Length: 357
Length: 278
Image: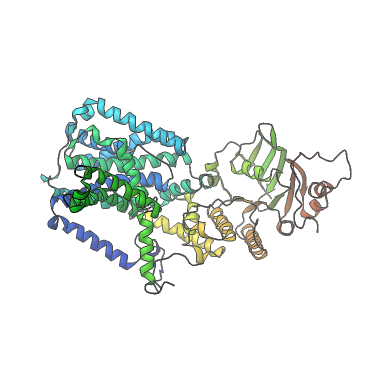
């Protein structure tokens, strides 16, 4: 039986260490370094619009990563992820405003605080599964949203709250060009940490709980502990993502963290690929870019002969929303396993090109 | 020989259904002990009681003299009990290697924090150290070609072997095998029988096995227990058990003494195994 390996012939590993690297081949390692170098140069080349999109992808991807650990790797479900994202945003703003903790520390601290909240709301996960758990997390979404609206001391209530700009040693990252590096650094750290987690003991335990919880228990895995832990981890990344968002906009208000965002997070990981770290990033980029791309298309249509012939006028903006929905539906029909799966297939194809067997 | 396992008159009831009634037996350390019986006799229920999946309604289970009746399932690998499942219970989306590594779970010390910081001293070292032990098991079970394959893509016989590997990775003192050869062809069965004998003799594991293939059971077991309708009807050396009239009745439905014959519940048929009586 052929194993689906992308390792080229003749690439033999003589140590177990060499067999456990994150990126299996030298080529993929060079590609990653090159991509990182290119991203580091991005603020010098790209304009503000593009940078803001990249930053958006960055903080959403960190939060979506948490959701993928919960849904993709541990096989649970949460439709309250946006609430944790919001909690991280408010927590970081509150910590830096009220306790005067430097933002650089407030962001990870906000992650820790959100973890605690996530653990509390994760407790039902020890007993509930599937749709029942989904409803329990929906409760988390609404409880937290209500809390945001009412806890004036913490969130500034409906008026929202100000969040300080990110700064290290007096150097302030208040422009998109500068803040981009903060997001990029955090993103890389989070993704590396998650990758490491998934190749060590507790990460394997999470996947084991997903794949067959009965035999996982027989392997000495405490199901309650890992199901709850998974909620904690997911909330941690949501909190970090939310904190990045807060200090980017420097203003946090209640409206942004509704159930729609929760569902968008689910969309990101499903489109990217459940249980795939890199897929999370791809899915997030997809979900952020599709509305933009559809916006460009409808803008291009505006005033064109098609527009005039059909007299679309203001309906163009509705066309955009419909097109976004259509793209997502088509995507799920033709690519149900996500972008990560497609990417693997593309790599497998080029490995054997031009002879397919 | 010291007793590895002592089952003291356990009963297991599900509402009105009596899965096990007053079953007691002991397994000596280093023994290869088989449990046989017709379908629905309570064999898997017995294994589930020992592995903690079920809690017996009455009676006690002692493991090396310690009462484990109320121990949690996930505490049992640490005590030294490992098992395989009758219906495949692998982690289907994980590689064979990761499946077996999960078996090392209770022996590893890393947690999610240290695991995320993979390059800290000791973290990677621990992983690689246990990887080495896992590779020994892979070598023992001839799984080298499949270590990077996804478990769900393997053939049935191979999956059974991976499951055995995963149970071995727990480093148990007592290994419970629930039909390790079901659905295998002759060659795979011979291999599996050899592995079981080897892990009993070379690795010194005490084995409690459920198996329907009488040829294998009679060949490799030290002692055999026969269950029927949740009761123990025979226990002893394989030849003696085969000759026992109760066993012959349970398997072949002979009716010699009408007053002693157990009344068969409707809809439950004793299934004669392929080579019940040699």
